[in-house]
Image (cartoon, rainbow, N blue to C red):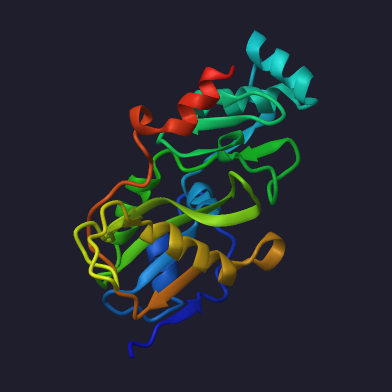
Length: 244
C-alpha cells in the first residue's frame, strides 16, 4: 500500500510584501518531486502586498445602502464591491463572485490578523501566483493555494482551492466502471478541493500560525479540469439571481 504523509512547515516567519515564499518553504523543508505544497491564501496576499486601508475606500450609493441594511462599515462593503464581478446575494450577507471566479462571502476579504482599520484582499490572480511559486522551486512539486469558506446546505467552513499549478483540478472518472461493471457517466472528483480540505485540518485556524502544509505520496493527475463552474452551467447561481 502506498504511504501518504502530511507535514507542516514549521517556524515560518511573518510574511511581508516581496517575500519569496518558494525560498521560505525550501529553507525549512526538504522537498521531493511530486510533493503537493498547500499554502494559505493569506500569506500569498501578504507577500503580494494586498493590504488595504479602509480610509482609502469611498462608498458608492449601492455600498451605503447595503451597509445600512447589513449594519456594516460602508467602506468595507465598497471594498467587497470593488473586488467582485458579480453580487449574488446582498442580504443577510454579501455573496459575491470574485474577479477570478471564486464564489464566497465578502469576496474573501479578511479582517483578522491585520492592523485596525485595515483589510487583506485575496490574491489578485491565485492561479498565476501558484504558477510563479512553482516555477521557483528546485523540485517538481504541485502547488495549491487554499482558503476557507462555507458550503451551501452545511454548517461550518472547509478548505477549498482557489489556485493551483502542477496538478489537475479534477480527476475524471467518466468512462470508468464501478463494482457492478456499470459505466460512470457523471463523476468528476474535485482533487484540489479535497487536498485543500485535508490541508486545513493540519493548518488550523486563528492563531495557529502554520500556513504551509506538504503532502507526500499522493497520486494525482498533472492536468485537467476546472473547479469554477461556467456561469451558463451553474443552475444554483441562475436561481439565486432569478430570485433577486
